[in-house]
Length: 340
Image (cartoon, rainbow, N blue to C red; front, side, top):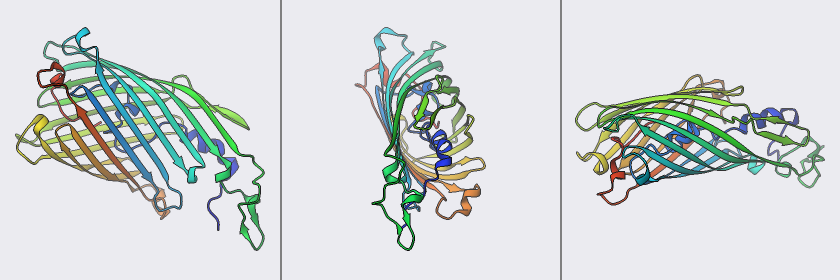
C-alpha cells in the first residue's frame, strides 16, 4: 500500500522551507522564536514553557513539532533594581513523513532589559541566541518509485537505490531588540528580531544551500476593560525569501475569582488570524503563574481544498516560579501576562 511518495526534484525546496524555526500560530509559550529579546520579560525568578503542534493530523503521517524552553533571572544583586538579566535554554524537535524528516534544535539565549525610568515602567531590551541545528533526511522511511512493482505495488524489501539518507548540522546565530512599557494597567511592547545571521549551511549529497535570514517585527497592547477583565492584542510579521507571514491576535481575559495579580484566575478566549492562511480560535486558562491553552487552525488559503491538509492543533503550557514574597524579583515588572 502506498505510504508516501517523495519526489526528489523538490528536495531542496522542501528542506529550505522546513530548515527554519518551528512555526506556530501562537507564540505565547515560545516568544524567543519570534524575538530573542523577549527572554526574561516576566515576573518571578524562573519560567518554564512548552508548545506542541500537530499539523495536518488527517494525513497518514502528520507533521509534529514540540518546543520546550526554560528561563531564569540572574545577577539580580549586580544590576539595577529594575533591570533584568536573563538566561534561557531552548530545545525543539520537528518530525514528519513517519520520521523521514527530522530537525532538532538545542541552544541558549541571553537577554538584558535596561530600565529607562526610576519606576521601572519602560525597558529597552536586547537578546542574542545561539542554536545548534541538526537536520536528518532518512531515505529508509521514504517511498521511491523504484520500490513499486507491476501487479504487486509497493515492496519495502526493494532497495530504494538512493542510499540511507543524510544528516547535517550547523550553528545558528540570531538577535533582537524590544521596547516595553509595562505598568499596572497598560502593557505595550514593540520589537524586531533577525534570525540566521550567519546563513547556516545545509549540506546534502547533491550539494548545499544556506538558510536565509528571517526578519520579524511585532508589537502588542493590553489594557483593562473594567476593574478585573483585560483585552490582549498582538501583531507580528515574519519575512524571508521563503516565508511571508502576518498574524493578528486578540484575546479577552475574563477574571473568574475577583482577585488580581498572582491570585487571579483568568479565562482567556479569542483567536489569531494568519492573513491569507488561517484563522485560529484559542481557549486558555491562567491561575496565578500557571497557564495553558489550546488552539486549532482553520485553513482559509487554497490548502483548504485539500481535505486532509485543513488544520493543525496547538497546545501551550507555561509556569512561573518566584522566590519568597519579600524578594524584589517577584514584582520587577508591573504585568502578569503578555500576548506575543
